[in-house]
Length: 342
Image 1 (tube, rainbow, N blue to C red):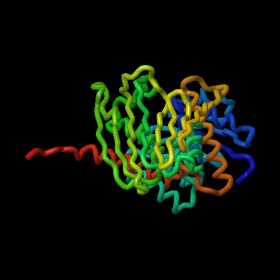
Image 2 (image 1 turned 90 degrees about the vertical axis):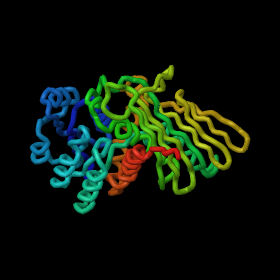
Image 3 (image 1 turned 45 degrees about the horizontal axis):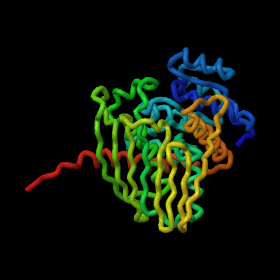
């Protein structure tokens, strides 16, 4: 892998701005954004101008053919992912794709298999496990301070208007589990290991959206740990926790939790301590988004390090398949809830 890593970006919309800022921040580490692409010429041109990127395109095929890229970051809607990923693999360009990996498990598996056969780096930009509070929590779990985890609750509940920035979400037939649930399910895997079964209840509380906007899931992990994983875009709680994930985990010797104030509480052997998880406010970030924005930078940095070292990233395509399989299983489980009284 060369000292300089030439990065191409496909998709210059709402969330892509965080990626653009992150790759720009990594310039001192040898990252060079050489081209951007968006089907909307105005968005591509605006991104190129804002970040001093030399070339912009409206066609991904043209960009991949003309540019000498070491990495491509695909930040587009999920229904476009398979075509773009397979196009990048054809050009043998290492690829990162925004979550959700694809609209369905079969497409995810097909992309992962194509990349594996071609020997091309493929990863999913799953950033929640890279949030600083979650990284700190993993450190506590790995230290053994609270013993072996046995029960957990992972919750992302908000009433924030996510549709303002991403209006297409209102028409998604499968909504909150794929858009938000994949994040919290991935955290459940990160903290408690692989799950062997899942049950789920979904709700559509907002009549204006097409898909489910609330999901409550119960997982049993191979270790025997049980976790409650929940997500909603229709919370009425005030103050709103957006965009923070609340976590509590109980172990054999104690417990650890992260509240909405980003304070970690650790109880072990009858003693309790609290840690202020200070998330830096990057120069281009703004509250309350800064927790997510810092994690995008951390995710991009991890991807570059893994690529240069010739290693699989933590959120490789094969790893993310396991998260997506849980999301798919949650949808299936939510339809099997008919109770018959005799």
